[in-house]
Length: 143
Image (cartoon, rainbow, N blue to C red; front, top):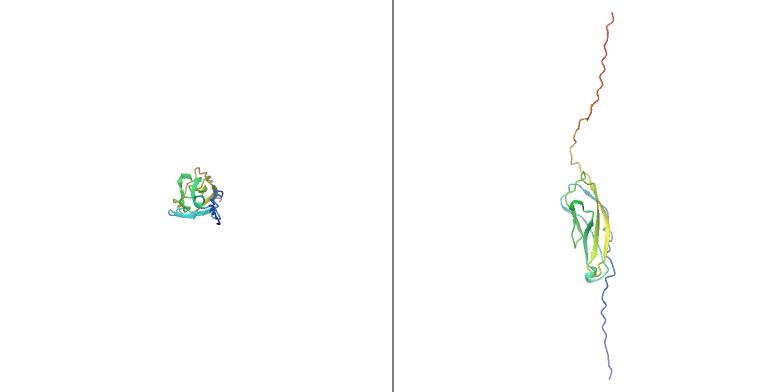
């Protein structure tokens, strides 16, 4: 009588890879006074499987006055209308993080430069101090 035994192995993924931003971590140029909308989409991949490979996005630093938001799962970066005369550029620290244990994170710095629009009328300001010199010449008539 032949006796056979079968062994089944299940290989479980270990969270040993951090997300990779690929080529989506790049500086941006955004016109001032733009309507609220998506100005960029971050993409990141994680070579792990399951929760270990699920990536979420957040803004970790540089979001002065909360002018920007990043959608947690899609990576879509949106901004409120920006004013170049108020702030010419922002430097955001974007985090991509997986859902495994232990968490793996990757960061990228993105500079958002605001493109100036001709949205301010010229204002004339008189000089603060006016120096005027006047010369008088008297012409004599010779006879």
